[in-house]
Length: 212
Image (tube, rainbow, N blue to C red):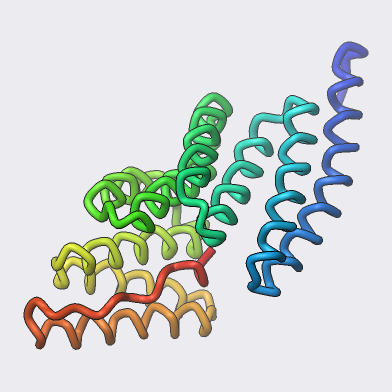
């Protein structure tokens, strides 16, 4: 491939950013496994540093993905408004870069920020927007959105639709051998099936953090 001289600074910047982001992301993910508020706070700091590197390198595709990781972490950290703002920012970047797969993940995070604040119908709108952007080449991503849809429908009392989406998600995870994630979805299916026999008395499904 012929590289124009004018492109060299950008290529070098992206390569340098990639190496540094890999280190920051590895540390951030390790921190998340500790599952404490302090560790999540440190992880957020690492992911913010990674985001700044992609922005400096002017790599929009990776910037959008970094914004997704940051929004996801803010959601599980309980900073729902900041998660919403970050995911919204990411959506703009993802759309300008034409990365539909990342756009779907970001739509899910916008939806989760609403769901976490109790705005179930609003969350459902964004999960619905994410679904057509999903691809069977990313079965975990597709299952993530299907499970979010199932949980959102369960929250608003439409258990029949909830089961339809959750069963599709469980089947996908079974096909790719993701037993732990399939088990989490099957647990939610059991909750919804129990609720079908109890009328208005509903038990909360397990949040979908395990599918991220």
